[in-house]
Image (cartoon, one colour):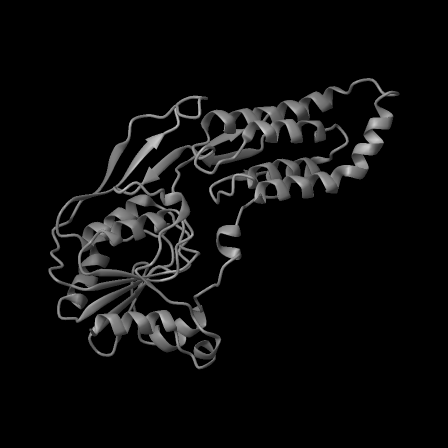
Length: 341
């Protein structure tokens, strides 16, 4: 239904120009530029048809998209109109990993978090939980809450965690009651960093998910499933309790990290459902030099759920307006309560 609404809206936007074009076609010779635009549209449509990994899972009738949108492509579109047209087609995938990039814009599908509560306020965290005296171990911001609970905020897996950062964190948690790992608003980055941090938490190697790659144009043409593993490092966390804080802006590698942590003992995911992002994107280029990408793999949990649609929390908590007005982070407070049980 959402896809149909997007297509209908786009057709309404161009309906007036379509009427003018239909009248002029009887008078004008075919313009090679129209074929160029049409060719680029078909190239992108075909590549998604052949290599996008979630058409069946999301029940998208991609053939109907071609039938509906192809007549809209025309030589009178300027670059920005044509960009918006192709971006609207990518939006039908409802995938944050599907983007189009030109010299003047980059499309993005952000409904996976914009349609939901934020459940995070950086000012409240900085003022009342990290404070002035927090430690900065590489990308990890660390403070002590209630004297013996270690709080860590990590805002992006694009930022490298070094071994010495984890050595510092290991020393801090060695005599603590528990650890709060806050990855809210972490939009992802390097999957290697997610595995590294999960490996620091783990006492033994384990399979956290399975992945397969789209290999051909058929809807069911995929490689065999392969195991994705976390390798435990030399640190033994013992019985350390870990609360992982999440919201809808936890995406991609951060979403994968949430899945990794969810399988560890003595852990709880607290906050909101993650935003998802379970496919590894591939890239392509149109004839005019614009770059596009979309997901080309599927990833499922060991029990068979797609990571594309995010991970639910063990303890669901929303941040209330009254608490925020008083400088209270309801999700951190829920983590403290769980760790003190």
